[in-house]
Length: 206
Image 1 (cartoon, rainbow, N blue to C red):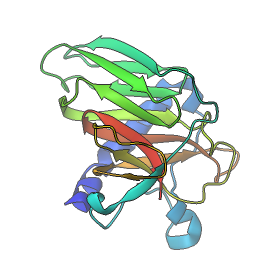
Image 2: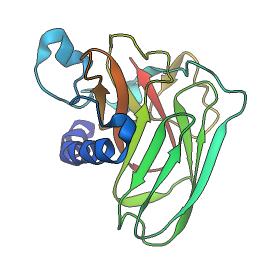
Image 3: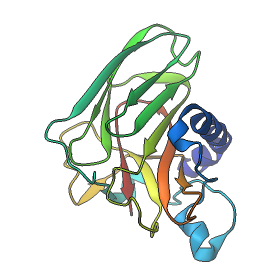
Image 4: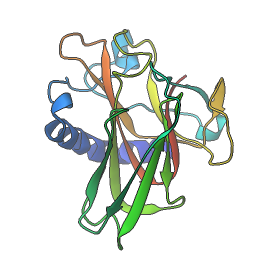
């Protein structure tokens, strides 16, 4: 079921990449997406991060910020039926909500973790009628400026007090794509992924 969901969302993700690159000047110079598997010679072109086993069996390592903050960064914004964009410039995070994704106006709050590339999105349990696109710059993370050695996953994790240190149990893997630098096709610059519900997500590697 997970694998089918990833393939179904691929078309939406490709469209989302085009929107993200046009809307954010910082991403306009980035190349078409690749993943670590493609770089290792398993295929050519752009592919999404995917897994063949159940998400419940996965344990991933959360990515770290290169400069850890002392306090979490939080933003809140009212979004209505027309959609909108929520950004956290300090972390390079952008959430694009399309028109028609919400039936009623809603105040959305996004809180960035102070150590890890992870976010709490509220109200918890919110579900969207259309794909919501998340774009995360990798320039402020510990993998910035280094060749990508393993795939990056966008993972949904439990809202209870699950610690993000070490191996983190994952509930769900979201369709995602890594965008690479136009100057070096091995240097990751951003991750784009699709969500349909809130609330806690992280970027991670295997």
